Image (tube, rainbow, N blue to C red; front, side, top):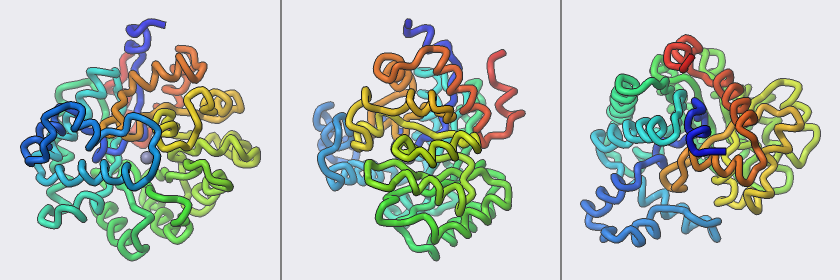
Length: 335
Ligand SMILES: [Zn+2]
């Protein structure tokens, strides 16, 4: 299958963390300007990119925090947002793009920034991209399960008070040590107010992780599941995903890097699809993981056993499952 045939396919990206979706050249320049001594590409890669399966969590976390430290102004956040959208369109022909971000994640490091300034910087970046390219971009507010219910309740209300700017809400971070159940009332509240709900669940290769998918569906009212790759180990969970037509936001390369799966070849993407699950293809963290949607598509066809028709099917499901209103998608989708 040619590069052009893959590129020509209009794409949908549902699972992308904005804070970790930077353009490499730009982040490297900011790192140099900050005096971090990152002039050499190799040093920058060491400090900011995850390019092989991670050996330990602290070293990966360190790279996330390095990136966060550099995102210290509204101007940078606007540029980051615009370039993320632009690269998605120009490199990969992504037409529908959902970007998720946790205001608490950036503001923890930059207390001088205000949450509304951050949101408006992101909105300016999105507006510029939508004016320039035929794409529809939507924002998801992300709650961090490593924080208290009280903190998250505050952010949930903050998001709901600005819900004209959001299409959905997500729950992220360590799902093993921090169960989702305590956050259920917040997600039920957001769902009742019309936001789409997605929850990171069934991601790590830990016994029983697949059951977290059921909690996300039954207690948090999830419309989609972030990752959910471990569902393959639990027939009941697969049956539930099929029966309820719940899409999985699969991120194969991210799964390899975090060792959620042992290799691309061992990834159950195709097996889940053949079992009748609505599988979608996503990048997770295109900046820090140094991967574009085009790279993901190539991996999918070269290592996951997907055909161009399979990819088209996944994009159809993703388009249908997007929280962005259908009329906005209709306006930009090529006929
Ligand atoms: Zn994620």
